[in-house]
Length: 463
Image (cartoon, rainbow, N blue to C red; front, top):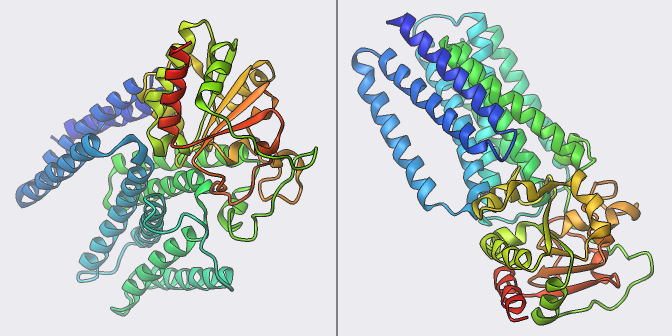
């Protein structure tokens, strides 16, 4: 029986690896998800069979409850709330790892001293899992706008974080040195400090950096799960956790490079904090911002040769992805070439814009990464920016005092005409002004993004 279960685990791991590989391309991502789902079913069945005797009803109940929650979330949660759900699920994984370590410690503490390998694994899993859990909850609250999405900073913040981290390290060393034979209060205090560090870790990070943070927290959860596998002797957890940890780390590094900012700056720079709001004037001096109407923009779009849509968080909030696809369809009927420029950190989670546009059945070959999109802008008649504030800010190229100086952006200002859809002139999550809006080739179409795009579609149809 054990051999059969081990073989089933091997198949599950193979499905996970292949599913992760298929996520490399939007064209194969759905197939990758299906393979990963099949792998998870195999893994759960194997766990249920392996849990013999009195334990299996509890495991079956847990699988049933988790499955129902997952189905409910898949049906009810809107695509615009996907970043919050990812953060919440990621926190659940980290919390589960910490909970397993906690239960394992209290069971072992009533019998005998811990094995050194188990002691190290247990304390690391508890610390990393707790940090991931608390940090993910704060990320969820920020994304859900239960609390401000701006960085929360205070005097002496780095000193406080350093002291909390030092306390965690000292308690962890004490735990390992005594093989878990600590006073009854020590372990709960260790968990408390780890949870506190998770909160303090995410509080000073603004919404503009949230995709990087979610990816980093995801890697934390993977590492915690892998370490938990060493505690309970599960090769399945070790390998699956390592996959999540490695992929999350690679994605975090890639996104940091895409922003041309070191990870330390993302984590400790309080990007978007008050004080980074100075205006970044355009090279030719400030000009009056031009407001336009849907009819005028409709004419501009209808008689263009190439139009590039630039989606951002504003499109997600307004749930305008289907309206954008409808507008693109109308333009293509008139022979207009339509493309979509996707910045790596647009939105609030990795791949946020790709997910929304895929839901609207936008062809994959029209979705261009930043490196492929930027050469297209100089030959575009219109760049239609839908709520993408910070990733289109030319201050990143030429204003050395700007907090985003050096960050690669989408070169929308090089298009013949730029139309920006915004509710108001409020700055984006980075908290800085955008000189793009003052450029002579830029005009503003104010209002809800979905309503504005629907009005543009009607205007194009009427021509």
